[in-house]
Length: 427
Ligand code: DSN
Image (tube, rainbow, N blue to C red; front, side, top):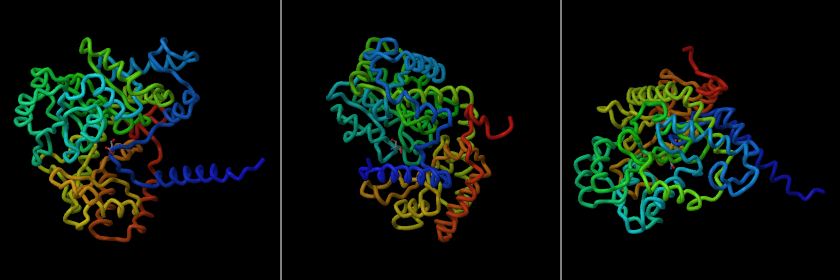
């Protein structure tokens, strides 16, 4: 019997279709997103989404997990192989959830933590108003060198010795250059601190051996989300070395501490993505970094003020542009205008911006990992820079540019570096 609610089902499906059609006709440069392969989509839409599986594989609190267990065990092996870690925990359901688990497992309320400030590119979960603060940590922030766009090593070393924190946290969300882990991890160890690295943004680059290798540089525990440069479904992961008795505390913090059931369909998607990255990760990550550098150079040639020129602009998937001289509302004006033209990215505070400028910051943060995955190469980056120049510098009608962007995207619809489509170019 009709109850009149079907229209809502139809509406939702209509929006889903509209979103998917729109996204595949835009140039998505959000640095924290990516696109999954058909194989991963199969996992995410599988019947694993209907299961409960608390605890460890083969020691569950629920019956009916025999296939789930096999997938999770394959996943643990693949992730340990990919990252050279002693342990891999696929259960966190987001990067923030992974960070929460580490803070709850390895620290006590009142312990000191040193983290990257959000103004300098740190993640909100590291801050007093985020997961670290919720754990009751006394949060201090790394001294930052604006010129180097990185943590100031000398001042940081002094700060570690002065504070003797329980945990130091590297990594963040605005992350063009590797952090000085090998310089500072030994100092942190000297004062008895845990060394944590939030690899949410750069996990795929680390997997592909194109960024720093945190676990070899002195990191005890690496957290990440699984859907940025690591092109999996939304989720989290913790990769860690065997640091003794506290391993059990960390594991207890994950379950039953900060989650009960993990999302098994996403877990299966992470496992397939790990296999994709073992097979194709080095090529994918290398192309991401080449594309980021190419886009930075092209944007500079088109007249944009790109951060980090004297350092080669970027060593990650990110390109950072200061648009403050183009308009007083800077990124707060530029990002929505680009969206009208089908170029999707986000405004971002730059390290020298006051916090009050959070809605009108000076910067734009650009990530090339998704466009790389659909097969774009360095020459495409030049075309993207031209589209951006036409909108932001030449002030062309964004609607006109949007039509051209949609036409341009038609050729880039396959998800490469996957078992479904292989590589985008001939080897
Ligand atoms: N806030 C996300 C980002 O865009 O970097 C990470 O959680």
